[in-house]
Amino acid sequence: MTEMADDIPRTYEEVMKSEDPLHWQAAIERELESLKENEVYEVIQTGDIDIINLVDAKWVFAKKSKDVFKARLVIRGFKDITPHGIEEIYSPVPKLETMRLMISVAVNNGYKIIHLDVVAAFQHSKINYNVFVRPAAGTECTPNTLWRLKRSLYGLLTAAKD
Image: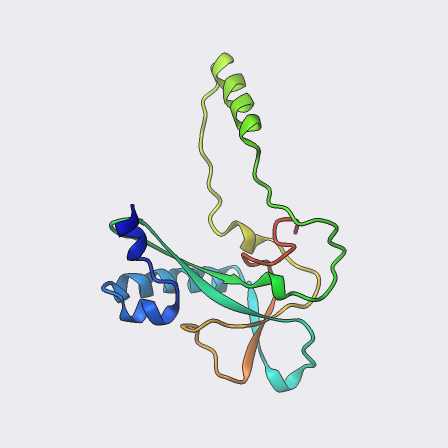
């Protein structure tokens, strides 16, 4: 397991120097395409707007198996300084006891259990306040452009609630 973890780059620069830069680049392209398809952001010129809430983005990489490379663009939401009426921050993940109960009910009643994974789940929820993002390396942005989020991204404080 540690051998596989050692193969995983932590930055875009490490991706470009890794043994598998083409696989990682393909994973990055898939993530960027998903962001475009879901209209997650719009590109703005930095001179066009007074920017109060600026956060930066970074890449998180994972290798699911020998041939499955994943790249996820996340924002560093802890830098989000604008109050949004957040009383608490949470992630919508059920407790282990809840999952055991659900499985028990399904088994006792002869129900079929199906696993569901929503691809790009956070990208489907709209946000109702301005968040400006300094895109991560590997995105096609010039130094004088930023992204204004139209939908949630992983790492945003309110992403799980939106």
